[in-house]
Image (cartoon, rainbow, N blue to C red; front, top):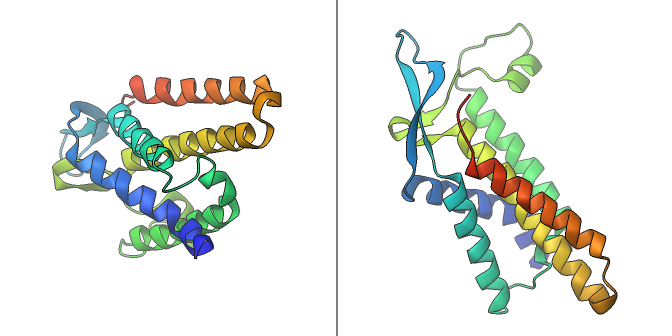
Length: 183
């Protein structure tokens, strides 16, 4: 049962990030991409830091309450990797196939995409920005879980290097989402 949950974990986290991205407040910025058929710049809604903090606090609350162990993402890393790959492929097919062919070869279309900029609800959700959030937040959850596993296994003999590298990666993720902007 836990292996199935590990396989499905990426999708569950992605959906949670999607919901938080849609409902939490954010700031609107003008992008560099123009709407098709007009000179108007697309608008993007940015709330990555708030989404990150909410997800990390949710993870910490689940761990603290004993619902999941602190190293859960570490324990089910291979199942989660497989789930992420399968979901990624399904998501790619779903967003590529409905649009008209752009390149001569399907693999080029599959890799580069066919749609210019997928947005929902007037830009409240932007596929590119959501995927940035997914990548950053999944990195952070895995860093925290892997550091938790190291501490659980080695306790007082844990390597400070693991925690320093975890702290540096955490700093990177927070910095990435604190100063997020559309280029």
